[in-house]
Image 1: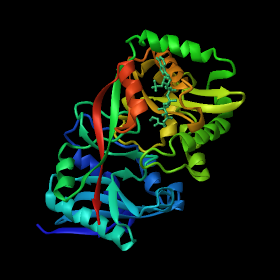
Image 2 (image 1 turned 120 degrees about the vertical axis):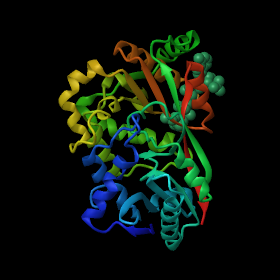
Image 3 (image 1 turned 60 degrees about the vertical axis):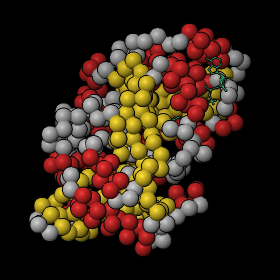
Image 4 (image 1 turned 30 degrees about the vertical axis):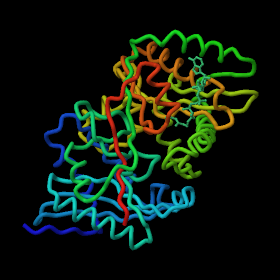
Length: 373
Ligand SMILES: CC(C)(COP(=O)(O)OP(=O)(O)OC[C@H]1O[C@@H](n2cnc3c(N)ncnc32)[C@H](O)[C@@H]1OP(=O)(O)O)[C@@H](O)C(=O)NCCC(=O)NCCS
């Protein structure tokens, strides 16, 4: 049957776009169905603040009348301004094991990006680096952690078949919370904690807006030179504040401060995917999970070290070690059994070294692909 690709234009097209994964993953017990409310808001250009600095087009592929694939193409002004290069992104890629469908989708996305003046396409970004990104290329045997991606093993072959190659690998480490911290880390963390002027404290959920502003200050400085980074805007900060307000557990979120100035931050989140995997995409916002929060506190068994960074001017101060140690101890106290540290750029020497020293091992690898246009 004939293969066609068309832009998502109607509400019906959007529904097909949103619902396609249910077909692709019907036999994959590790797939975590996205919550449809959050997923549709992410794609909504009038709602997601990403679209205040980016434009995008969404595409669907059909074999005959049957939807067999989807993709988005995005061009982000803030990415181009930060990195001074005309790189466009693709994302939300889902496809049957059908090379012709992958070809049609990727060609449509790349043609759109080229028409916008991009010289390279990179992805997947859903829709940018501050959201879910990367294609899973190793470690398919367990479900993804909260806010991480998952896909069938054949996607790598589909992308490579269209001339896409590795741009960067993103690593996910697994660390058992029942393990003890290496004695030198415990000792070093205590030394740093008691250094004059340094305070390591939990986030104060009573002043969450202020804590998120401090977090952005750390993020925009600490991650500035990390590959692919794009700074968070005011509107994005506000949106994340609304999303995260009910999801952060103070025991897993820390700031290090010196003389009233923030040095770094560490934010780990409980692995809500342990619950979301059972909801089959139900239509309610992620924040509504708070309804069962008290119960979740007892039932969740894992967490994700989501963001841990030290501002450039405070590097080598050793506070990173306090974050690693305090997070492990908090996880133990909360009765969590294990944690994922993700994602870590493969070229992030300091972080990879520190996690390996703590006993972490890479158990999933995600890849950002690229192709010259
Ligand atoms: C990753 C990151 C937090 C590391 O910060 P850092 O200041 O370089 O690292 P630390 O605070 O752990 O300090 C490192 C130094 O502390 C000392 N130190 C750390 N642990 C020690 C120990 N157990 N015993 C003795 N000294 C120790 C050492 O002097 C070490 O330097 P070395 O590795 O050259 O020997 C920082 O590079 C960063 O913010 N990166 C950007 C954000 C990011 O990529 N985060 C990861 C993804 S979430």
